[in-house]
Image (cartoon, rainbow, N blue to C red):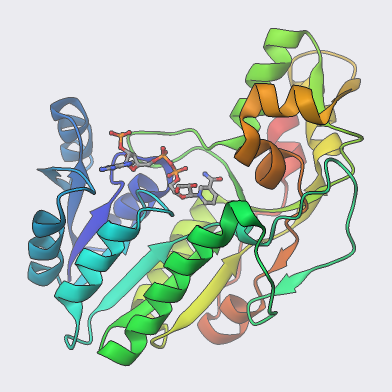
Length: 295
Ligand SMILES: NC(=O)c1ccc[n+]([C@@H]2O[C@H](COP(=O)([O-])OP(=O)(O)OC[C@H]3O[C@@H](n4cnc5c(N)ncnc54)[C@H](OP(=O)(O)O)[C@@H]3O)[C@@H](O)[C@H]2O)c1
């Protein structure tokens, strides 16, 4: 198949593009700079220069492809609108990348017992309302003749296969630990996040592309741990004794920004990838985030 991938120079998009290319698909990747164009070309992906703001370009690339993987930005509504409009009535696959922070509470480091399967209803917090509306727009395209699906990864770890090899949360917390001389979590750090290895996630995209019915939504996860345990592992990886330090809500907002502090670092995001396992036969091979960090 000829597949158009947005975010092809990024962590998720690059890893998925590389997996698609290895599975003998022809991959076209959207990139924003000539430098990234060369990096993705070296991975066997055909670069196309452009941005998510160029709706006409996205529409043409989507129309000319057999399928689209959108992994550049979970929140960019007009890009999604442009590609879905171009695909209407085609029956082609459109896989949108969201994120499990859509169910994030604002627990500021406290644990929650609430878990979410793919069909569990929830009301997003104000900082995730727009992202959930994008997901709903994508899923509604199933009624417009698009085999549309949403993948919502939890905390992703492991080296990416694309040009950009680093994820978000663990490297960010490690950088903060280096800067502070101690690993730090929001509040008591008892808040829990599900996680998934990037290679298992890329495999999930291939399965969604091959088998997902129109209008399906999948969390991606193969384990979970608290932010405090994550920070303990970061501490040990840095050669320290596993000691951690709490951050106040105000410190967290100053460090990460209000949205990430509330929905990523201080929240619970406990999702269960039951649908991917049941419907797509997805069987993640990795379940050792903490060991991966500690080395
Ligand atoms: N990593 C995680 O743990 C995780 C988990 C769940 C959800 N997500 C979500 O998934 C999405 C991708 O995450 P990621 O970790 O792959 O991020 P990333 O490594 O920063 O990759 C994003 C890619 O998209 C490109 N991009 C961003 N905005 C663009 C625009 N306006 N026009 C064209 N290209 C654009 C970037 O291009 P440049 O290289 O030019 O910057 C980059 O190649 C994000 O929305 C993120 O919130 C990530």
